[in-house]
Length: 143
Length: 393
Image 1 (tube, each protein chain N blue to C red):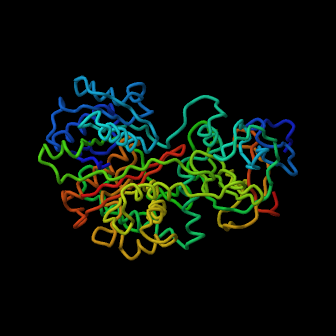
Image 2: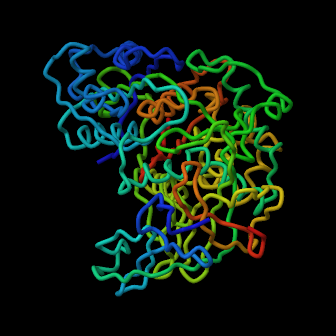
């Protein structure tokens, strides 16, 4: 996989370092709240009037909060290859950021191998249409 | 001053999938509600419509669309949109008008015609719209329901068999409901044999989308008295609160929760009935029947706990004991719920109130909850919308 030639599905949502990619979030300079995606101008903490944010790399490891799969082909704008290959989806809890982030599971992850609470890490993989996205992989598992 | 209003009439167009104009369904429901209330269309002073986003401009201005179709007669008009809670917000608008003395009797109405298959976002390349983004990544509505279901399995030991039990129960409840779309018994084997949609949820665990319509005639208590309907069921609470920062659950259509670095995470679904109980001055122990938004079978168990009908994590136990069946301690979804109806977004929250109205009047036939005195609804939709309505006798 050559990240240089692959375009991300969403511009600026994650770093393109394929060895150790990060989701790109924002952090409020006043109250410290993290946001993903990072497009934010006004802090959404009702007790914070923050308008200044710094771009931050979110933790690239976390704990599996829950998981499922897409057994049916999702509608557009999802671009699926034919025949449709079901894929997994994970919700991952980031400890430092105290937030839960969704993403597809790395290709080939068997749901039977998963357990809520296990450690996962972020990887980059192409979607069916070749556009790069972030996915979650069991920590330490072979790509 | 009492903050209650009376429900004089309830009416529905049966749920199904015909693809006809949503206005047609709405008018059938409106006329049924008017007849049920014994109120003439000419006498209705306010039309409060719930918008549908899938049927073009007439859907965006649903209140006026229905008023015109019933025959312009100079009533005040309003349209509400709040995703799945649209009907409740339309009801809240009518209550405000009535309690402010700006009208005495109102028609509240919602109807929808839904496309086939998954609900999908608007077209185009729109990375600023979280609803577009999640579909771009292949994350559909059942994804969220399945994540919540799996979480229950991990935290509370719920099983797929438990989820199937919800389907079996609701299918039995809806069997003789003339307004239900699916009126068929299911066995555990039927559910287990249905196709996997989003593991652990199968096709029979996830609700469909439907065409349908529901309408209510509501009035001041004075107006009800004048009509000789002083004992009509009353709306005692309408909660339409937003979530409170920070959220503890990834909600549709978001890809992430609010970070809980600066504020403790809170559960949105639990906040909705909490406000309703507070407004009505009653507690969960007073509830005799509940209509909850079972977008999935597992979600019904979440709602039972969010309504505080049992402690957190014990929803499946309540179900296994039969407490949530008609005849049990606290029947849930006697109408058959979304499981038997499928979702007709702007009509659904009103359909819940229609069911409670009939239950409290003792007119629910084979699905009657004996002695029902207090009913509560719960529902949730996209973008921080949700509602909980309490109807009492």
